[in-house]
Amino acid sequence: MTTTRDSQFVVGQLIRVTAKEARYLERTANRLGAINIDLSWAESLENSDEHSEMLDAFVSRYGRLQDTLGDKLLPAMLRAGLEKTGSQLDNLLRAEKLGWIESTQVWIELRELRNRLVHEYMESADDLLDALQQALQGVHILVETQLRMEAYVKR
Image 1 (tube, one colour):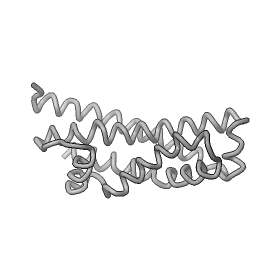
Image 2 (cartoon, one colour):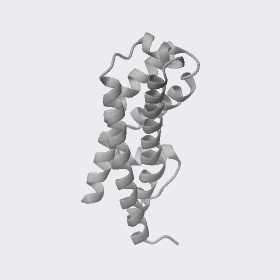
Image 3 (cartoon, one colour):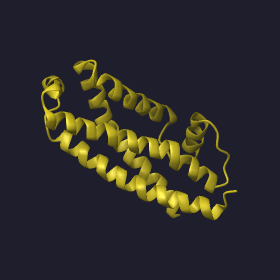
C-alpha cells in the first residue's frame, strides 16, 4: 500500500525530472527556432545528420516531457492529493479544473502533434514541417504546465 509520504516523494522526484526535461526541451526548441525551418530544411533531413539529429532530439524531448507530465506526474499528484485517478482523459479534465493544465483540448492536440511528428517524420516533408512548426509553438504550453504543477506542489 502506498502511503501519502511515498506519494509525495514520487511527486517530488517527478517534479525534478520534469523541470530538467523542460529545460532540455527549451534548449532544443531555441536551437531550432534560431534557424530557418522551412520546406527545404525538412527535405534535407535525409542527407543532413545535423538536421535529423536536431529533429530527433526535439521530438524525443517533446514527447518525453509530455509523457512524464501526463502519464506519470499528473496521476502521482492526484494520488498525493487523495484525488481519484481514472483514464488519462479523466485525469486531464481534473487537472484542468485544478488549474494545472491550460485546457484538456489543447493537451490532446499537443499529444496528437507528438504522434504526427513521430509518424510523419518519414512520410512527408510538408506534413512534418507543419507538425514541427505547431509543436515548436506548443513548447511554451508544456513548459508552463510543468511550472504550474511545480508551483502547486511547492505550496
